[in-house]
Amino acid sequence: MAGVMAVLWAGALIQVATSVKVVADNIGVNWGTMTSHPLHPRIVVQLLKDNGFEKVKLFDSDPWMVGYLAGTRIEVMLGIPNDQLEFLSQDYGNAKDWVKENCTSHLHKGGVNIKYVAVGNEPFLTSYKGRFLKTTFPALKNIQKALNEAGLGNKIKAVVPQNADVYESKSDKPSDGVFRRDVKAVMAQIVRFLKENGAPFVVNIYPFISLTMNSKFPSDFAFFDGGHPIQDDNVQYNNVFEANFDTLIYALKDLGTPNLTILVGEVGWPTDGHKKANKNSAKKFYDGLFKVLASKKGTPLRPGEMDVYLFGLFDEDTKSIEPGNFERHWGIFDFDGKPKFTMDISGKGGDKHLVAAKGVKYLPKQWCVLESYASNQDLIGQQTSWACARSDCTALQDGASCSNLDPDRTVSYAFNSYYQMNNQDEDACDFEGLATVVSKDPSTMSCRFNTQIKVDGATRLSFAQGAVAAISSLVTLFFLF
Image (tube, rainbow, N blue to C red):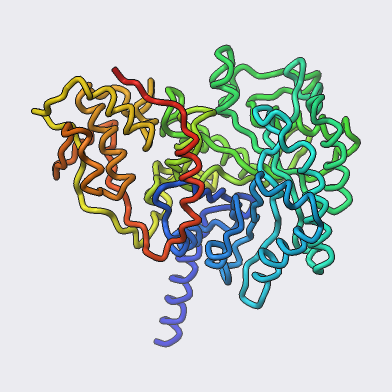
């Protein structure tokens, strides 16, 4: 009988292990925190474990947040924000202190499995107009030198995640790929340094951006359907992801580093805020991507397994919307950790929902809406714009999930967004006497009126600092009338 029970227990353990290990070793995920109500890192780390994610990329190095990854064996890429590059480039001592505080302190028994330090994030974007051109490489050198001197250089590599806009092709064919003229000199220094230190080139590739930035861009080429292929000599490209990747390889070849290891630091598809950003399109993109990754065929110039980090883990309601309203909707999970759609991360036909975040608590089920008998009707437009400028109304924009609401419900969405972002404070549902709190959910089939999550009292204020900056810099008002 004991033998039978042992077999049953072994079978159960195998079944559990099989069900948990959904994510392949070469797939990680980005964990951003530009949100008004962040989930507690304890909940997020459990979500990563429940879904089998073994790699995570961060955008900062908050020790409180990073500490929850200790003992998990999850491979971590720490982040250094762009606004710290000058500080780290000016004095090697600053870099030594950073490594001691953010790396060495976590590397005890049962500590954090740090693999990379991302020095900046897309610092050479054209929109930055060269702001970080002189500080990025010196900061990279100082951080890697500090890692080496701390005895960590073989374990932890310093990298610089770059947006794909650092390279280009005059013919749109990969074989003409070169780095942009304004960054070519510094990129030559960076790629040689990465090669010398055994570090990879990290690139963020966004087919969605390619599609939306060019009205003539063929839609199916943004996915993996094989339509509108590009013929480059004897090589055919059936999707922009692979074509973009190989354009980078040609650019690296042009600088004498054709064999440099490449990691895709960000790739994904948003689900709202734009007419081409929705859950169906996101699922279609991810299904195609996962099949390509599972095949391990790589690209024409780089056959084999590809390492990628999905972007991102959650929607972030305080991200800057300067690039577009879709910027707040890249998550494969909603703001509260609920999966948005089924996914076949295995790439082998195992389509299912990811495991939702556990232990999430919500504010009461109540919403702020336009009072049906409100006076001062002439103030509605002004108050709606005021609310949207201080909350998140990106789902109301043309083609987005809430763009078809009737006028009164549109106003209600704006009021409720502000109300929830301010923790359902009574004063946050006034709007010059135009609003009232209701217990009946005003959501429609296509448009969800959220009730916000409770933020754990222990949640660090630092999580919200980026949110304050994003809101204070928001200059786009949503005039809906």
